[in-house]
Image: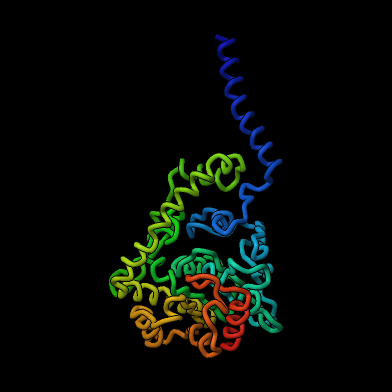
Length: 345
């Protein structure tokens, strides 16, 4: 029995040792669990699971695709680190919330419009995270953003997907990214729903390994990518189905932004909503839901900047400032947006 016990103990130690050795060898080939920088893997590489938002930026990661290097600082934000404490008599502070458009997925470090917005007398903190909806932006404002004591809160509103994202418990383009969401109660009250991000122990363990283990990603990334690709084929169907009845989406988006404005007002910060157009609405007539959203913003007194107006005023074609139909901006688009936002202060 002693011999059997020793054999069983040895076997139980050998397996973890072999796995650790395999992980070590894998790290010699690829020091990062997320070594790829292809456009289709950027979001998965940049993100880690968050029990508060569904996902957050991976602190300290640096990826260098063809468009230029994308870096996340130690605080989990893009751009220079900004201390939370304000310097008495220091510059005005702007806090930016948004998704991949504000984050600058298609431009190098220093070229995103929040980074270009910074100038003497104006300090900018960007909390933009690729894939975020207005609901997640509100949650991040309440949990982290208000602590920066900004003078102005700028919310980048992506017309291509934010309206729909707010109604979903997962990222529109990939169901592999669950998220919290709000639903409207009586009198337009917002109720937070967190069920989608309350993961089981086994699923949390899988997420932990996927975020940290090179070996795990070598073995399972391809299958996961194929699954995500299959899921993403259906995003347009989901979007069309929800936009067929846009009134609840417009109401929810408006209520979320009103909450952002209320929370900002508590610390003396004003709100500016920056609406990014889609190719379809920019090149043709804006859909009815977009016109309804714009009218609702005006009725509620939500200060907003509709970038389509600014781009048209300069006689720009879509390809002059955007790289795809969603509205991701090129370097020129980010520079133009920074100019337009700065003019609002």
